[in-house]
Length: 182
Image (cartoon, rainbow, N blue to C red; front, side):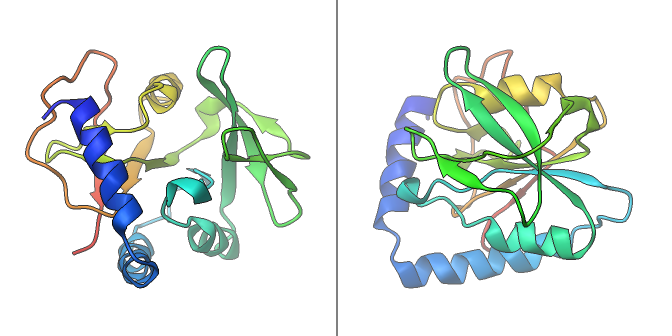
């Protein structure tokens, strides 16, 4: 299927998930994520969940990383050029919801994208080759292409990957791992 079709289908599927289903799926995903080997990783970028989009709640992931003395990095979106700026996040960081419903840091220190070693990537759906479909603005494709070559990428998703995304382009970046309920 093509990205626009997949985007429409999986936005709807996400909307149809019950609160109970979401909690069960998230627990499954957290369990898998917490098994990841973080021993050689210090700087971890985590997306801040957009509540109105029913994204996977990343707060438990952030808490886990902070409790293991990892440096958590979050972003602010620049919609004038569809790019992200990256900031260190800790328990004292204030967040403000932007006009798109995205939580963003207010009082945080900006860091260079090249410092990031692991990126937790949001997605609507992925395929078995670990390509993703997001919301269609290219924020994460631009972000991941600016990271150092060795950066690790992990997508987290409510749904099992589809067989194939038909309309991939040269800007699409395959992830290293996709975590979904098993």
